[in-house]
Image (cartoon, rainbow, N blue to C red; front, side, top):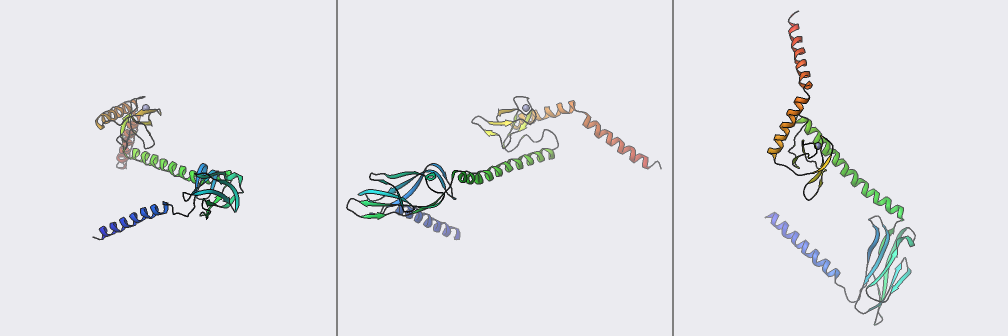
Amino acid sequence: MLRQKRWSLWFVVIVSLIFGVGTAVAQPEDELTLSLSRDFGTGLATGIQGTFSFRVSGPDNLAKVSFYIDEQLVGEDSEAPFRLQFKTGSFADGMHTLYATGITQDGRELTSNSISRNFLSSSEANRSVLTIVVPILAISLSGILVSMWIANRSAKASGGSVGNVNGPFGGTICPKCGKPFARHIWGLNMVVGKYDRCPHCGKWSLVRAMHPDVLNAAVEALQEAEAAQNPSQHDDLDNENRWQKRLDDSRFDG
Ligand SMILES: [Zn+2]
């Protein structure tokens, strides 16, 4: 019951928001509305840099619009659409207030809302972009490292050098060396498969997820091949056991 009530409240809020925006967009008869559009450059919360345009809408009989930056007339337009393009680089860095005035055909004078923006120098804008982009890169990079670390751990935990080939992204068989491996999270999704790196031969190839039965057969074949190729590991283990046994035996000699 409470849940339902809450939902209906949300519905009312959302509907009133939509209608509220709708009425704000509808142009009252004697109002001049200024908005700013980015044509080329950087628009950030910290400021703007590049080429931008004043866009002014007003009553149908609007005859002329004058554009201002900090009380200074920067241009006029006597034809709809009322627009003026400017470059932030033409003005001093820092806060600027933009507004427009208009005259209607019947002689009424209108003043628009004003918009304040921090004009950034291009180096400041680049720095601002970097402060946003670099952390995003760092986060995604650390995400990859964490997933690699987890993949590495789980491969070790599962015992063999082959590891688990039936990962969340499916397993596949490397077309270059014929060995099975689990597809990785960082593999690039292509239409027909993932572009992924084989951990055995290190080559990149386009691989499709394969059926677990096919993979298990390939894993068994690989494990057998590795056991045949590299029997020293088992010998080491046997030697160790033998030594342990001898030690145990010798305890009773004394
Ligand atoms: Zn391979």
